[in-house]
Length: 203
Ligand code: ITT
Image (tube, rainbow, N blue to C red; front, side, top):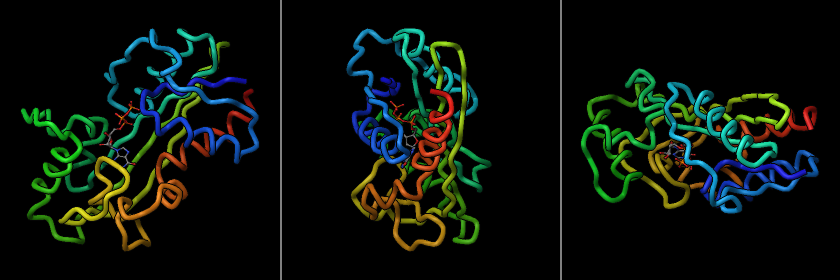
């Protein structure tokens, strides 16, 4: 079977492929690079699950193949769960159009937490992964990684908010871990492994 992963982020394709293979699933994962005419789907839903489903539905319809999509973000306790589904666009919401989005987003969260002490700096990364089959069958699973936010960025790997996020039972940020170490505990790793288990039953 071929499964289309609804992303133009080339890094996510081998990650998903590895997780499916480890789960014993004989499927080939292809990204949207193979489908240049695939529709751009705006993330308009208020939940990660809703956005993942929107994207998977559109790509299943376009390709006629089983489609997987994910949506993810950071929920900060002190900000009542924000930036949440707005994580990728957080600084832009406040008028910042500067070049490095990831850095601007991270710096805005640090500013917003400037007066918040360590014990109130809890946060979690959340990922929803959706699968839509050509038959119309739909499934959504989620993964969560709890942790806290430090006040100065550390580490050069990963992306987004990784340099300020320290997972529970860790002293390093997720930007100080290898991709394998992060996958083993991350929201996306958990969600993709749950999805692999469901795919076993569905395909
Ligand atoms: P696609 O939608 O094309 O897959 P994207 O980078 O926009 O790519 P998401 O919408 O899933 O992917 O990510 C939303 C944002 O949440 C992302 O831009 C980061 O700011 C943040 N984020 C999600 N997962 C993260 C992680 O593992 N580490 C750091 N930041 C993360």
